[in-house]
Image (tube, rainbow, N blue to C red; front, side, top):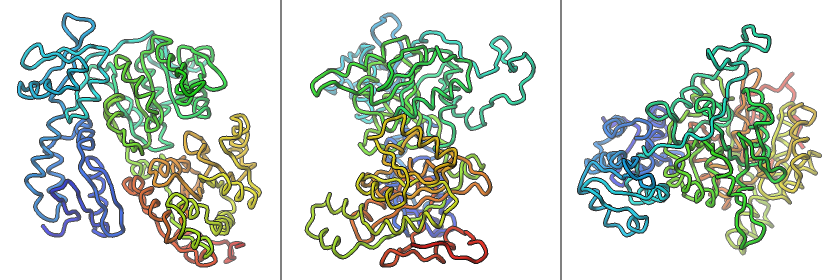
Length: 594
């Protein structure tokens, strides 16, 4: 009884002993219904939250299954009051439903299983302001144009709503996989013969696409969570093909827009004339339109309207795909609240948002419908295995002295831009002298210094999209081995041969940024299918504190950071490196250190 890996506490926190033989089994179970909030070396701390429990319920977990898991993992008896609270919170998912009104087109019905609950909720002033009106002991009318606002408010009040109010079909659009015959569903090549090279979804991609459908197969709303390199774009296309409708796709940047367009042209029957790019450079509205979040929120002046938000109503979209949904800007949330009758699909590698608006993703895009753990895909060989190493770099005495009198933000930046990191970067680049390497950072002065030292190209937001694409192309073709990149490369940059990433600075404690940066390495590799991620952190500094938080999401996914020391004056121990990465130096020769 006492030799179990977890301590479950009344305040909804769970302590996982990392050295326990069953720690990995426990981590996999906890990840289904709890959030990792701290990760010191001995005990990781998880917390049960309403949202983590509701997402588990949306994925099919029952309160009984969660309580059973907690009992099986807990070293001591789980507090009875906690088990009761878990049952209560999970039980709230499904107590309220939003349904079509039987007689009024401009109204919906909010339905409850319990009279007392409906009476309690209807007394809230916020619901009265939305226009909720009681019409029977268990039912209330809601203006249909307040559908999104109601769902946001009900989640805030602690009672998530199951939305069964239905969706517009949108304008029909025939979308097939390339070579697929619309009449029989078979596949053939352009000459009418069989096509043995036809595109097929992997099993998990098919399950992810299927999970988006409501009962009856109509599709509705929800978020699919899969790691970078798992084929989220293909899963989105599969949803389009299932629904056969005009689609608006929103994504993080112009590079991602063009990657979506390339995938659509390569893998579907859609023609170039049916696909439009809506970005800072082009404004094409076509049956399938791919746009950036940035262009939607763009204003001419501070007080001007966001005129491109009209794109949501430019055509009769049957589906809106939110790529990198964790980046959704606040104005797009507001617009999404107004279009709840349109099917919505969110795609992301992590539901973590640094602004704390996970509840709005849950309410307005939908609950988590499917999640594929990163390590499971790694075990199956669909993504690369990544070794994560945190390298602690000493800070020169003169900069440490400056930190003592600086403000907290300046302390962080001085540590992040630690000039001693440059020597370590050079050592790592030499150590992986045959690898395609990305050096990723936050601060432009630091990145310029690194690019100059290595004589490597630097890609920043100041560079035109065409220039960036040229360097990305050179990197993919192998004519450039090292790229220095700013945060513009955090998202949706397809560099499949990158096998080493060196993170030199970042956005404070951003868990999503850490996950996205490691994600640049996850495309399968030839040979041993292994990649290496280094986080350079100034020891005994504010950067060290933020680094612990940055790593949380990846630790939750099963990644382990090995910490090594760069001894003054920032020299790495080659023997330690060889041991950490299980690398062999050919012919017994030492790597070149500068």
